[in-house]
Structures are given as C-alpha cells and as structure tokens.
View 1 (cartoon, rainbow, N blue to C red):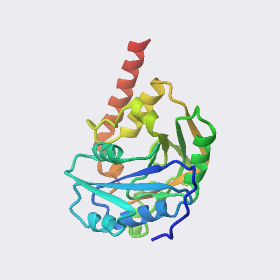
View 2 (tube, one colour):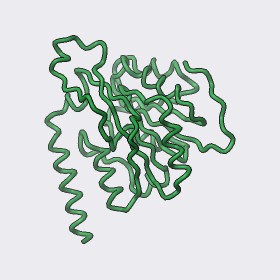
View 3 (cartoon, helix red, strand yellow):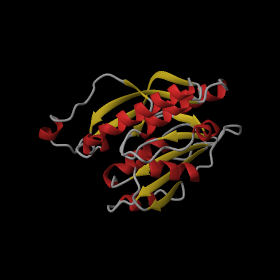
Length: 235
C-alpha cells in the first residue's frame, strides 16, 4: 500500500468511485493507482456489485483507507449510483476496477476545477493496453488502439453538485451509462473541459464488459435517440 501523503489544509475532499464485479485479478492494481496519486484528501469507495470471486477480500485488505460495500448484482450503473450515494466529497472521481489512473493526474485535473469555478467536469485522454495475463492468441483478437483517445467516461472528475443537477446514472441499459449522463449534462449546459493529457490507462482483456456485451450496442442507439428526442421537445 502507498505511504500516506500529507493533506493540504484547504484542499477539498475528492471521492473516488470504484464499482467492481468479479475483478479479483485487477482490483488491487486499480486501488493502488489511486492511492499513488499525490492529491489529498482522498476518499475511496468500492461497491461490490454481487461478485462471486475474491473481489471482496481484495478490497477489504485496504480497510480502513478504502471503504467497501456490497450489493446484490444490479449492473454497472446501479453500482456507480450506490457509490455516489456513499461519497462524501465535493468532487467525484471515476475509476473502473480493471483500469489504472495515470500517476499525478488527479492533481492536474483538480487544479483546473479549483482555478476555474465555471468548469463542472474535467475529462482527459486514455490509452489502452492488453493485460499481461492474456495469451498471444487471444491478444491478436483484441483491438488495442495505439494513440491516446479523448474519453467522456472513467478518468473524469465532476463537481458533486453538478452531478446532482444532472441526476444519477441510468441503469435500464447494460452499457453506455456515462454517454447517457454526459448527453444529459450537455443538454443542461454544464461546462466541461477535455485535457490533452492521458488521465487513465484502460486495460483490455478477454472479459471486458464491452467485449462481453456486443449485443448491447443497441443501448447506444437508444441513448442517442433519447437525447435527440429531448432536444426536439426542448426546441
């Protein structure tokens, strides 16, 4: 576990939201990547969305630094919303249980939010990597992008009051909860910034949610259609 980092007296609390479902293999690295951040004070909340592996044991090893909560399996949006209900910080940071926060980026993003009160959310770029345990044959079937990509999902930091104005993640679909949230935020006029720096390293493996749920691409279509319908009704 990372050594304690002194708290800056006037720094606001950041709550990190980590939902987990059967990610025993990766969860410790995700937590360590957040503990390695130089920004403090930092709260880390892990919601176990009904895991049947050893994810709970991994999270509990970090107590009391990491708060662990269990819920029956309800999906990624449901787990995110549970952590948001538990979070105490004025700012919310998002990390998935198989990804890695880029070292030092929490401080960079918080500097933007603290120096620019008109900004509600700070996003950044992500890079992808194939997890080291993936065999060569499987790795050849995984499309891993070489260049950093802008991301409107995990890796974001959002003001808690801004998040509340938009409302919770919608859990009726299997994927795309962040896209849906960002579209609703844009419709309400929330101001976001996209940093050119890499804020997150996205792990690719043979059980990524996007790979498991290719049939759920229809969720994206429904999300975009719902946004267009809302805009038409407003216009």
